[in-house]
Length: 178
Image 1 (tube, rainbow, N blue to C red):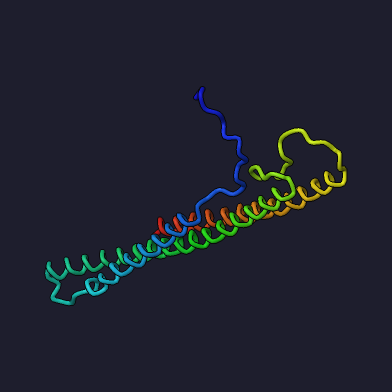
Image 2 (image 1 turned 180 degrees about the vertical axis):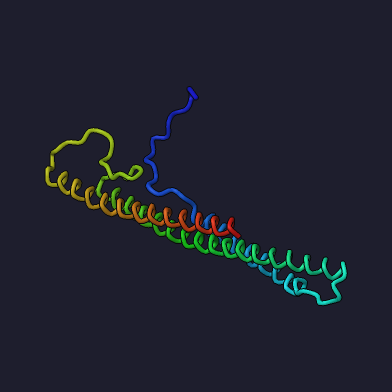
């Protein structure tokens, strides 16, 4: 839009909403428990009936077979949902830790006259002089130290996200196999 300006604030190094992830994880685990309970109610109905081999007994046996198959597939689904819920909840905690560490790195950067913009620790915008070469050297060293810490935080979070994706994909594949 011609009348607006771009947001000049630095970008946050870590993005995400741990509270929403934790709520999703809890919802998945709760839904898995409810489904497991409903499937458990089918146990009594899936027992084979013994009888004379009449059409009614054959229908009851077929019905029991279908209920057992439903139970097996339902167990795979609830296991996948429970795993997904646990992993998403764990990741919410990891994300919360990464956000807190990134905030502390940002605070330390600001305290030394630096800025964290995205995944980079940089000097502030504008003209700076070299009136105090020692202070400039300390600022550069501080930026390098903070950058190493920020890189580690971002790498750890990326590794955790990759593991979460892998675990969720494996759960989905197991669920699809039934």
